[in-house]
Image 1 (tube, rainbow, N blue to C red):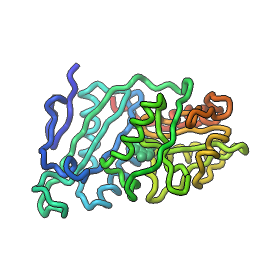
Image 2 (cartoon, protein in one colour):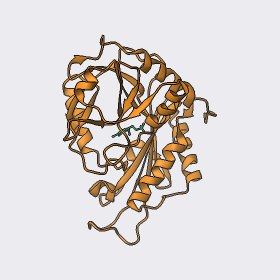
Image 3 (tube, rainbow, N blue to C red):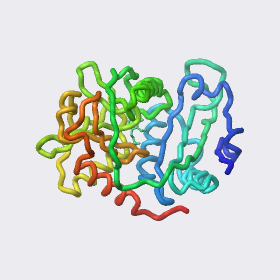
Length: 286
Ligand code: PMP
């Protein structure tokens, strides 16, 4: 089946989807993006993702390329045309095409690109869990803005793959874990409390992180927002990661050391099941 992408008002074959070489997203990573998970024909946390797109655009002073209701229609249309009832939609807004110059161009229309990708249907069962390695956090100082400037994360993820791990946890100059390359980082203490780093300029305020906080509160679990070290995570009762496409995924090894017995923990299992239940309680679009 041939894939379809949306590029600036047109639905085009994926292999022919392109933007200009002087698009500022290409030359400066002057672009922001979002990824929304799709489970059984439902968008997960759509409104918060669009809210975060709005704040990323405001931070960079880029205008919405089309209105929010129109964007919602385009996201649905791209998912439908690609028959994606399980998977994700990716959408990116750049400042647009302009003669190369660091300062903002005066009259440029933002570019909008939307793609969709199929993934196997998600299971509430997390399977065996995943391994992470740790790497120094070498990213810029505004990773709270969801820009396409992702090279720091890409290098970390590549190192993880080369070492047979699923994700890399990035560590700041003080030895505290910031976040994964494309996920937020959590641990569960011996007392059963959930710990995750507070939002600020050093991490992306994950939408899944935000929803999992609410789910945890509903389950009467305590969430403490504070930084933690790699050693604390290795000695924790459980560790897990959250993101739009990994949901809640238990972490069973950190830098080769097993977390507890090296099996997914009960808290992460419950949170994954409850998270999926909560976010799929919306109208399907297909
Ligand atoms: N941190 C980073 C650096 C990310 O790239 C992502 C995923 N885009 C996340 C955290 C998780 O965010 P979300 O739950 O909104 O997918």
